Image (cartoon, rainbow over all chains, first blue to last red; front, side, top):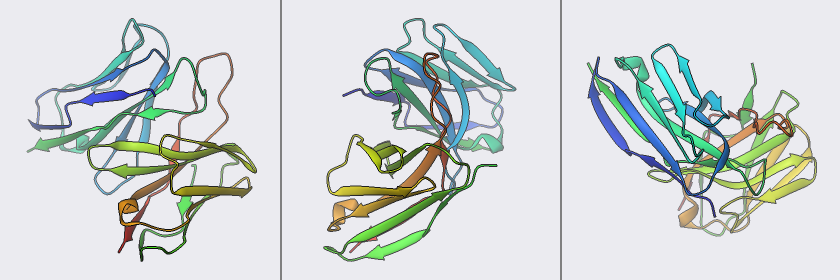
Length: 113
Length: 118
């Protein structure tokens, strides 16, 4: 079945440093979504990317979808303590069920003040 | 705002018991999902439903069943609970995807049920 790998599993940064998490799929994706889960909370939808090579920004967050639509990244510039949480990517395979997303294992971000 | 409500935040059951986890959403969403979340493994899909009485297996359906008798309610059933089913269970709902556009609607999650099987 489809696998979505996410690295790193953990990342500790000093406040103000940048952070990047990477998502790689074993198969081509129709789209990819990103979610954030605060400690003790539930995943919350951030964004969806659909087009090959697409780049979207939300304030300090930059999301990219690879040209081959098999990988994606989330980059946070100048992290803040409010960025703490686990970031998940979730991809829909180009073939197979259109209703199902496969989630990555997540990257847990700790921001040290 | 979409509200997805899971019946219990914490639940402790014994091995062999039949366990019911309930989920209700208030936004008339067609799709509903059950995931389990374990450290280092992310969210793994157990079952999902795209309509009343309709269901599809996810990646890890063994040992679980589901029921969707009403559009707003999706139940996860552990037929005979085992210790390896100790986990955080998350319910989610979404609108039906828009065909032909390669899109999936965002999933809205409940707060989760932390289930311990002793």
